[in-house]
Image (tube, rainbow, N blue to C red):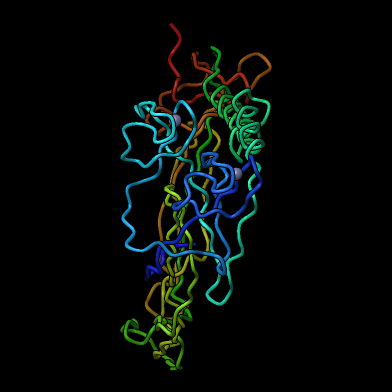
Length: 355
Ligand SMILES: [Zn+2]
Ligand SMILES: [Zn+2]
């Protein structure tokens, strides 16, 4: 649950505890630090929340922080105590009482008392966890899966790095040349479009308008509340109402425009190719229906690419290279370069003339 929008304090009440020596239950944990039946000191680990019907209010509550556990006799003492009220041992270095998870309920329910705590089991479980027999904390089981995932991810990254960087030396002679030049052709077309009318392009035509939902605003319509009990660790708990504002979405409408604009749109490409140095690269000849009519044509963009074929024994490699390089790499000239061991692909940027 997210942070509450509003918190209202409902008072402070006594936790209850159970005497493990004589079996007396539901003793108020702030009033009775000792069992009224047998005199045994309160065990803070037996503290629990009472039901709504049996809870007792603490008047003029002042928080001093969670109790400290006497290192000699385990009796809970106020956080300010210098010596144990039960055995007189100094409280230096004493551990704080472990507090319970808070209890939460809906506004119109009642709290039940939390279950009697099996004190010996709590201690036993702690020992098991310390010895590693039980997993540490609740997330223990899922952590193994996380480590496996991290391991698989690391292996995959290593495999990718090997594929990229593991290369061997190769040498070959230029066996052929290829070139390709291409020009994109665009035609002026009627393109349907739509947008909010306040941002419509100035050259739009065939416009039709409609009312559409453009956004929405959140309107607070009420509150959802629950009650939380927080263990103060000193034999008391605080109760508070926590409320979250409830919102409803209200639509906001605006004018939406559908229209047509004339735009230059890619239509086709015209290509020219050659397969040798002597067949000099040239641009394809264009015959365009020029103008500004619908269906008229214009040039959209040019691209060119040059490749050499390299022969090494029975292996053939193809490399895309810049024009200046392509023009000077004569058939029969010898070159050294790197080849990826995994993919067999040449690193065309590593081409160096032999010798
Ligand atoms: Zn008792
Ligand atoms: Zn003590």
